[in-house]
Amino acid sequence: MEVRKKAPASRVVGLYLFVLIVLSLLWMAFSGKFDWLHLSYGVLSIVLVMALSRRLILRLDTDPSQDWIPHVHWGWALSYPFWLAWQIFVANFQVAWIVMHPRLPIDPVLLRFRCGMKADLAKVILGNSITLTPGTFTLLIEDDCFLVHCIHPSLASGLMDGSMQRKVAQVFGEHALLESEMQMEVLRDMDRYVEEHL
Image (cartoon, rainbow, N blue to C red; front, side, top):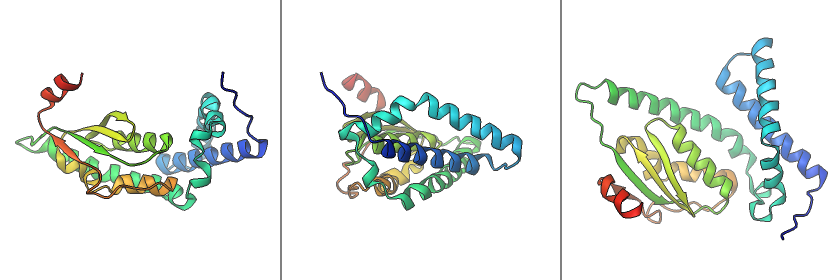
């Protein structure tokens, strides 16, 4: 049975402080309201999220394979949510154009690629960022390979050129693969893929 050593109290406090700051910035950025009522909702939400995710936060700090804190570049970490919010904003308009177009030019594809990142948290952030962006959905993450559904290839330009992967890699001090190394595949025959892999 594996015994995990207890993390130093200062490290745990630092981790909780980091989560508190990130959640607070996200709440303020996405709510856009700063009156006492909305700020109190924000405080309650953040306390609830931190209480419910206590075990996950402590696991990230005590599991040596997830030792990501020393590698985080805080400038990139604080700017990433705003970059992602802009990507979501732009993708909303792209999806709206597709939906409102008289010919409804939907061209669904599956994208399969490697990201090259090792930290589980970095891969989870990338997968969630893809899913949060309208028109794309992360279906599978296996090692460093991703499978993403996209309603039109143009909506996945940030994935195809590797810009989203590079942004997440910068946050965690990870190596981002070059476009030629990602082994990007655009799979149009989804039924055949499902039959072969499920």
